[in-house]
Length: 277
Image (cartoon, rainbow, N blue to C red):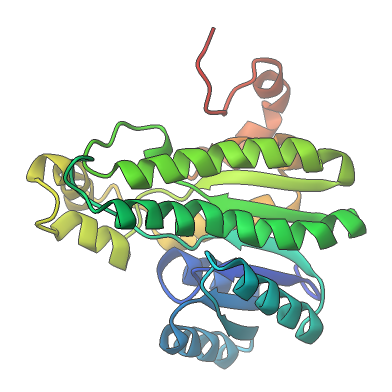
């Protein structure tokens, strides 16, 4: 997958942009000409990320923010738009692994913190950014979900629940925003080697039965290059898949082919989290 989209003169906001998938997405959008607002909690990681993008001739500015804090989100988005211009593209990528273990053994505070970052954080950013997008009648949002939204994960329920909820939020928000020309997608970037997945693969907090699938996937090379995941996000932001707004899409699927099958997908109400009847 490789496309030559032109995002020149457009502003993108990527959360969780200091490392991993968020950094890969930020690099890709910068390479396509977008001015990228990098948002994360770590000023050190943001400094390195913005410096790297600028060294390649890209345009990037960093903004330290905890996305679960609505007031901080409001302040930072106002600063972004005053400094860089209206946000046309939002990528809600910030996320945490969360509590690990059986539900009756985990720390309830840590379990709920996963919801605050993975779900509330995406809602907070969308809530603020959408107001401008709706007013301008243009804009696109990608919510970075996970295959965990569809799986049974007995030792990481907070993560799976947060991603399932984020995917359902995508569907609801997309339907509400459709008439205003705004598209919103849920996107599974695949198993990417990141600090988060390294922890999930190696931690003793999870029994081997909960980690074996990930270990096998990494050992067999079934993990996804973050650049490939980032290219998928760029495709969705480009507008080529607007007909599939509100759907749960996956890096393992050919997005061009899905767009060509969009009538069937819509008629049969496919690519949603739902119980077939």
